[in-house]
Length: 304
Image 1 (cartoon, rainbow, N blue to C red):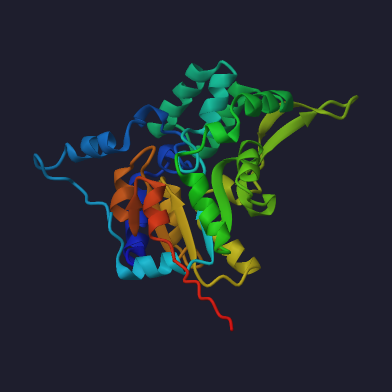
Image 2: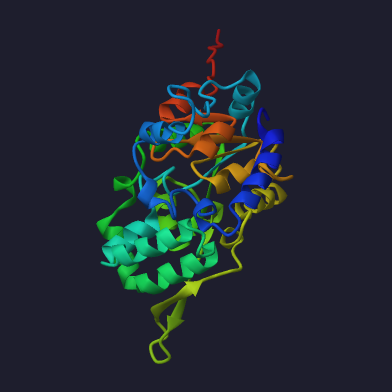
């Protein structure tokens, strides 16, 4: 791993600097809607504090030979979901659908300021959204998975699957909003790691009627949940090489612990985060970059 050894020290330092800031611990683009802009504009903004005309960081846009070899030999690829597979954050989109966008954005700002922990921010956002299972079904119908995918992701995942590479989704978002995306992409439910909504059930009908927070037993409900999810994948399958792809700090963390991913590829097609871009083993803006660098097979004809 070309950058993983350095990542352990870097991420530890980031945790110290950002202690309590949910904004750097949410998955994908969660808790960061107000900084979302085209990737290269984000890069330009981040560079503005450096010497005029001199970037403050340089993403690894060209992979090293070691990185390329690890990518091509991957037995499994794990993806973040929000702002990696999708063009938006599922919970933010659900809040907009439920008509409480502004209230949820206030909590987003509080979380980014460090006033709220990730757990508190998620609980309060869910409380404001206050959706029912029926609302979830209506939301999915209004925003079907195909309408939310980042350009080229479906072709890339299909190419991986055609090569026998196992695909996993590891998200700090919610299973109820992630499973339809997984189904559309042909990814088994068992390969999805995400938070799970808790529901209050009606005593008479036995049906879920009200949202009551989320299940804290899920790995992704806690800090370092993503590397823990990958460690569990390794326990279940004899994979030699696992690659993690995502846009956020929690995705970057996947290579920072023992038993985590062997390679981290940062994705900046929706939002570019300077820390992720500068520390990723390989940083891309378009899925075609990975597609064009995939392992190629030669076909031989044998006959008489």
